[in-house]
Image (cartoon, rainbow, N blue to C red; front, side, top):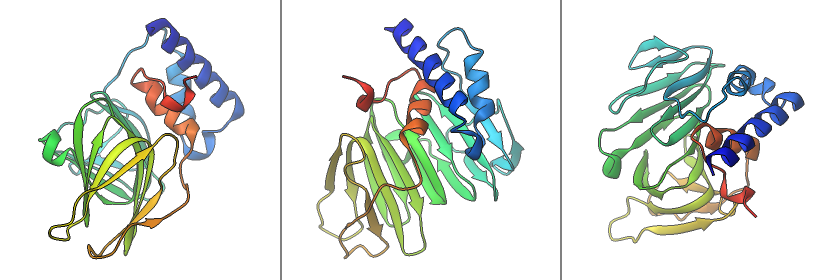
Length: 220
């Protein structure tokens, strides 16, 4: 199985690099680096960085480790790809994400901006300003806006808990971008349907490959 994933990873990255699909989002160097690896190594920390990236206020770059309790910020025009455990992230420009010390209660908090994430097995919680999202080995894209938050469950299962007292969690399941929604800033409002935007399957495949997995939608 490891050999199969490793071969998939290399062929995928070759295809993406040849097509030039990642040049526009600053990840071509990441592809070239991954192609140079002969083994399936799950590297930790920042794999690729363009522009200004800080971790707990300290200027950071490729190879810098990210630990629980730390905050990752990207400046204007910046972008970071990083791995924490069995989880991989593509953090877009002008974004702030805090990683907590308790996976079940506060694995990550998206304060601003946009981030595409793939997660390993186990229950985790994501916090945004006006909701808590319980995830179980899934992938999602989050974009924080002033009056609402865009959330695409790329695949997997989640429970969305709004702050309205007594309201039950909203359960979502998705096989392949089936349930994009807007989460309102006011807890008494319901989720609103949305379309898929600002992320794609090639990025998901790359993130999953970095942690030695295949996205479920690629399996026959």
